[in-house]
Length: 177
Image (cartoon, one colour):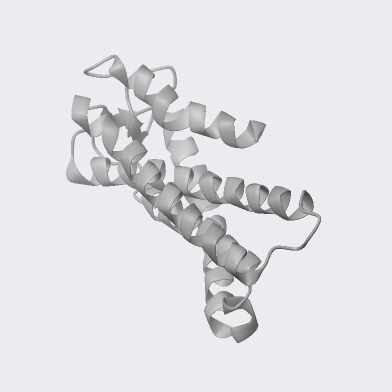
């Protein structure tokens, strides 16, 4: 373990504090979405809603603190943080895709175009994020890694491959897009 137990404890506390702020901000966005009719009928706000949902999922996973390795709570934390992270940056990428498709058009998109985009985005994001979050379970690569449960290299070194396939490549794809 590259960190001392004291350093891990500090990192876990800071992670929970940061997740609390993220959770509060995201729940504020979600509450406002449902509180105001204008937000619910606005395509852009629908996209932001799902970014916030991903952030809430990730925060809930981080609220688990530092569970013991190979426990149900550890596997729940690993799945929630993996899934929540990927959902968040997938929806941010969807926002970028929509902005690009609106700007590049000579004629503004119709309501039918936007509804088709919305359905297509859902059909791409949800199955792909679920699959990318389930894959590490097949090789038993969800476990404790430096104080938090996520994709680990132990007992199976395939965890390094899973990290790249399930997290880093989609993240970098999102950033590059």
